[in-house]
Image (cartoon, rainbow, N blue to C red; front, side, top):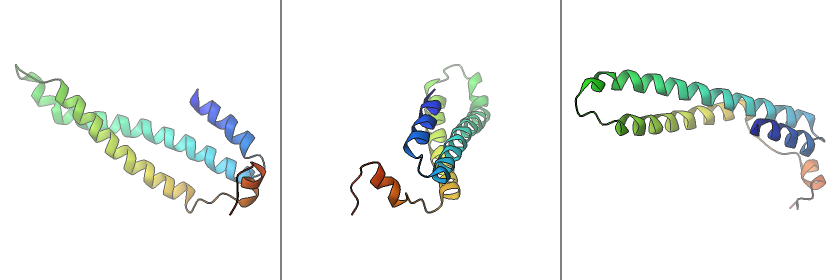
Length: 106
């Protein structure tokens, strides 16, 4: 639902620059897909690492969940940074868009 709202916002706000709008929409979908994949990969790798410990009598269920949050966060940040650098490159907003939106230019 948030993705649909963002697409509508981008389409309205960046109507003067269809190329920029298309670039941001592609970036948004790519980031969403990468977040799902990094979460899945982190879940699988954390499960394989923690699996032998499940058989213990006094197994702490909180530890693998905490590890999963840290692993997923770190991997997601690195992957999203790399994808953003690759897809957006040297991102610059054209000056004509900013003046049309009423933003001050300096």
